[in-house]
Image 1 (cartoon, rainbow, N blue to C red):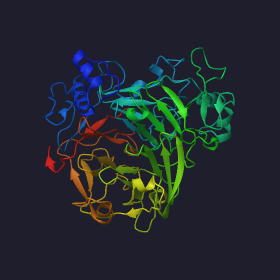
Image 2: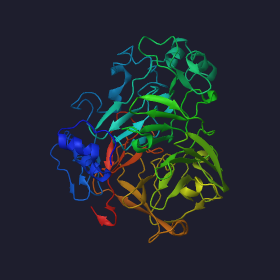
Image 3: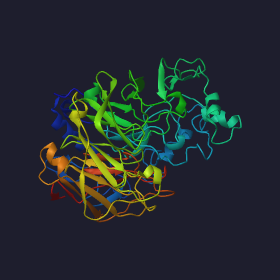
Length: 512
C-alpha cells in the first residue's frame, strides 16, 4: 500500500487514491496530474499522447526522434520569474537580505558572478517530485548554498531552500584582493566562528547571523564544483514524501584544503542538511544509487587508473572502500558512471584512447571512450571482483563537440530499451548516439563478453541549442531520463539557455 502523502490536487477521490493505492496506480494518476498544467506558448494546443499502459504523457513531450525546447521564453512564465535560470537570480529573492543587490550571495564580478557559465556541475533527478536538481556550479559562479531545480510539473526554475546569508566573495572584493584570490585570502574571509574547517559546513549557531537566519548545528555545505556528485535518494528509502539529495564524491566548497569533500544529505521535506557519519576520502567520482541493495557506489580516486570503489550503506550512513583485483581506466571529466539496470552492471565510460591516454592530459585531442563494467552486486558484496572492458562495435562514429573532443559529454541510461544514449553538446547539432547491449544477452557473462554496438542517429526535427562559449554542455550527468514524458531532459551551460527534451526514434524495439 502507498504511504506517501498526497499532493495538493482537486477531487477527493484522487486524493484518497493517492493515499491508499498500489504504486502502479499511483504512478498512473501522477502521469495524468503531471500533464494538466503544462500549457505554454507554442505548446498550448498540443494534445497529450494517450498510452494504455502509461496513462497520459505531457503535451510538451517530444514525439519519436525529435528534440524540442520545453522551457518558457525569458520573461514569459505565467507565474512570474523562473522561465530561465537567470530569472531566479538572488537579486529577485525575498530571502536575500540585500535584495535587489546580488550580495551577499554573489560578488557581481566576472570571475565569480552569477552570470557566468555553470560548467563542472552535474544534476540529480528527483523522481518523487519530477524536479531536476542542481547545487552550486562551476568556478563558484552560483555560490548560493541552496539546491535549485528545473521543475517538469510547471516548466520553471525554482529554489528548494531558503539559504543563510554568507558573504565570502563580497569580503574578497571589499578587501581589494585580486581575482582569483589566493587560497590564504579566501581563508581570511571565512572567520572560524562562521566556518567549520573540519567539515566545510556553515555554523548555523554563529552569533553573527541576522535575526531569523541562524539554525542549530552545521548546515549547508558551500557549493562550487559539484561535478557528478549528486544522487537522489527516493522517498521510499528516506521515509518521507519527497526524498533527499545526497551530495558526495565531489568538491563542495571553495576551500579545497579545508577538506570540503562530499558527504551531506539534504531532506527535501524539512529543508535541512545533515552529514554522513563518514566522508569518502576521494573528492572525485560519479555516484549511482541502487534501490535493491540500498547502496551508493562510485569508482575512482582522481587518477587515470584505479581499483578503488566507494560504497555507501544508505541505512547505516557509512562508507566502506572496496578494491577490485585489477585497475581500470578512470578520468575525471564527463562520462559519468551508470547503473545498467537490465544487467545490474556498474559501467564507467572512460575517456581514454587505445593506449590509455586520457582526455584530461590531451585536453582538446580526440579521445574515444572505453567502457568498463563490473557486476554491481559484486562491488557491494564481500568477495573478490574485477572490472571487464566491454567490446564495442562502432557502426558509425563517436560523439564529438565542435572542438573535436568528447571530454565534456555524458551518457545516460534509458530503462525502456536498456541502451545508453549521448548527445554531443554542439550548438545546432542534430545528432545523438545509441550504445546497445549484445543481442540476446541474459546473464552477466553475456553482457560482459558480447559485443555492444554504437550507432549514430539524426533527429527527425529540431537541433541542440547550446548557445555561447565553449560547448561544455552535457558534462557529467546533466541529461536525465523522465519516465512520464518518455524523454531525456538536458540543458546547456548558459543560464539563459533553454531546457530541451528529446526522444529516441525507437524504444523497446518498436516505433513510437
